[in-house]
Image 1: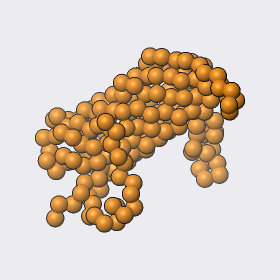
Image 2: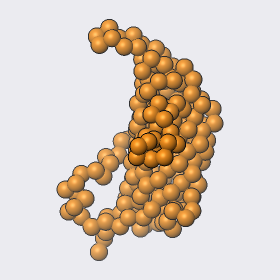
Image 3: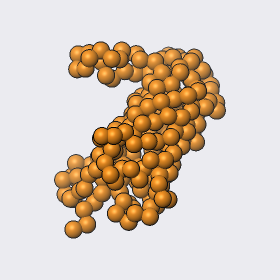
Image 4: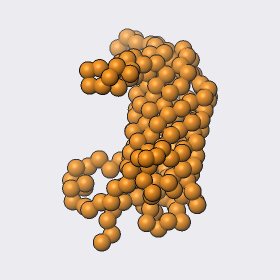
Length: 193
């Protein structure tokens, strides 16, 4: 089900595009389904692999959310978000999962989210020190998807690309409970004229 992210420079240069801002607030839940430790001898390491379900309510964040993006207010779900942590759930890791995003009037987006866990990229020296490099309970990454059904023909087949930041309660077993986050990105449509 993975959607190829529109990240090929030649394709971006070759075609004409319409771009609309996407700015959403996220709230929901992270539920642990499975958690297993693994010891590797070559190279020497200890990891924890977790599987979670994610359920998010997606709501417009004015003033940055564009008019076309209002159709994406709704619910986003990931049935299987898999994370591999260094040592345990309180250390650095990476994650990926396929999502289905239901918006207004039958709109549906399918795609993949992937990124890193227990990190803080908004730190000094580039930004004010609002995060530390080892910020626990934070998932950061990129979400790419394709609008596969909608009552709005202008959006059908368009792509969604966004960065997300999700805050959760960390634990040695991978964390679970209420989550909050932000999603900032774009809706990308191929120009038809």
